[in-house]
Image (tube, rainbow, N blue to C red; front, side):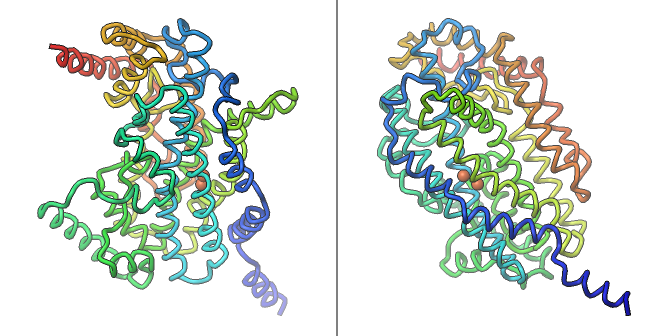
Length: 465
Ligand SMILES: [Fe+2]
Ligand SMILES: [Fe+2]
């Protein structure tokens, strides 16, 4: 009798992760950080913030390079502001991706049943992201216009660039993530249509026993004849080509295990953001303590981190614990999960930048184009040769910036291992973040980045003749 009572008590007791989800949802809905952040975005005025650093000096473009040391105080302030702008422009794009995948996976959890609070939390998060995106873009647009005018409005700080048309930028102030970020920029050729069909058929065949969980969100898109969503920009867009991401989307939108697995990638985005956002929060607190003026963007970072802390808890809880609610992954699901995380490590985390502190990928030509435009803009006013000479010193020589980059790489590695170490279904190279760890080397970065610079410089000089 006693045993039976004990058993039934155990059965009604909600699991720890369900309690965490409920508590997070309740705290998140009671908080007013989103409202505060939106208000700051509406009131932002560059001129009232232009004479202040918005965060630690090392979160500045070109920090630690010989050029940074030679820069004037005005230029240093601008580099600090442009770092914030670039970072949050990238965050805005990545959060648009998150919003889509929140909807894809919510469809699966609803089909499974019993996860109502989680679904409400995810819907609430999606709404919060739309306010975050709008705020980042409002501040970003006004700041860029004030610092460098229309000359370098395209933001290629993190890779794939937007079109350099101020009207496009204005349009993107309206958060319509589906339209802006998920519409294929390339038309579909018969080849790509066949390829996409074949990949779709493979996914559906391999997951045929999970069709009852197929996300309503994806069903609705299919009914409208719209393509399976996949990011073409931001963090997500860097992981793999669009057709592979669409293939993965089908997995995350059909199998309950895979829907949970997606949250290990969302955690990665949370960790990358936190790694750079937390120093702004520390800076905010220091200013508050000293009773000094707090620049609006610093306050936005502060409130954003508070909102994102809820999202990080949810990512972690689903990725680390909730997946155990469902049948163990099949060999196929394990393979797909391993492949995507290895690919994510390779494309997002396995290098060091010499000119953009905290960016854990090697410098690419797109980033060099961005810097070339910055150096030839009125802010630095350099000629072509002079700009290339300076860039060479910043990219190809060891300097403090590389060491700062390594510091951020190491703190991110720790955050990543905290989750991935605990995923027993993952490949060992993913559990210990082996690919990422191997990229934390200044020697390797100098070789790689110098090679890219040589290519870049050659093509720039060729345009001269
Ligand atoms: Fe956000
Ligand atoms: Fe978020």
